[in-house]
Image (cartoon, rainbow, N blue to C red; front, top):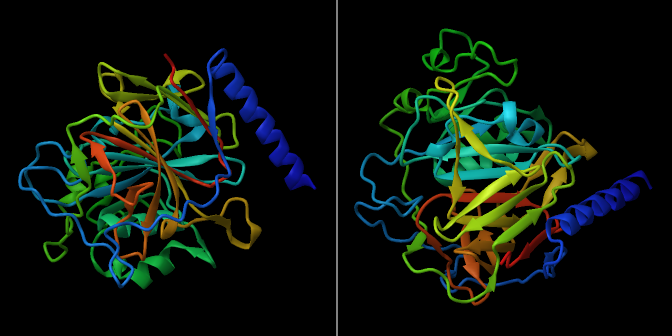
Length: 369
């Protein structure tokens, strides 16, 4: 009964949020959509998908001009109070992909930055990992920076590291280690910021510690220079994750071809710890990846977010809404994003925001024009 009441209250809050955000505008609400059950056109007989070809001089994660050693770095980032104001992250403008994933059953979320094109010397605040993030690391074969892990039976990060062999590759960099570890000095606490949200990561220096024996294989997305010409116009998006501090919205800027993110109507920014400057950063692609989220032993702080599997996906690209699907057969495979016809999605070149959430999460959009 308590769970039902909580769900009803969350829905009331979400619809109240939508009614305010979309006053006077026609709105499309995406929630509890039937499984689209799309089969990708490139699916092989073994249930997997081939990787897309590597294009020399083109980044596999952003589609932008890039040249260098491919070694992505995944960093766990605090998102307390929605990650705005004094809780805003730093180093975010260098992230190729920003993930938002469930943290607590009450709707709290965690952010993960994936760096590849540029390795910052400062990114944070670094926080802990959950089991779903460990499966996320496998997709990119990334170096993984975090400050502790959850180790409950049934949602143990260490168990996943052992299963996948990540613990033997020299790619795991936890802040909860002694000062004798070579990366410890690159995870200092920042004076003037209250713990635990004050750990800074020198991603560039930590990445240099990954042994040469570890070779990350690029798995490029598909990119295009053309804007989509089909699909509903979607200039305004509102997302209700179940906790008002974490509900967010995106506004599309035609001139920049970017979706700018907001929380409580405040812009989502990346701050510079030295200059105190706040820089708004936007996304060329926004993905809502509908996944199964379980709570280990009914523990409201122990999410098991399934990044392996398949489900509906909602894409917002170039000011348009494109319904589709995602599939990742196993932890060694990449996630394939596809449209309703099973064609792999061609993204805009630039940065991408991926919200991994349940099918119950309400997402509303309007033309905003």
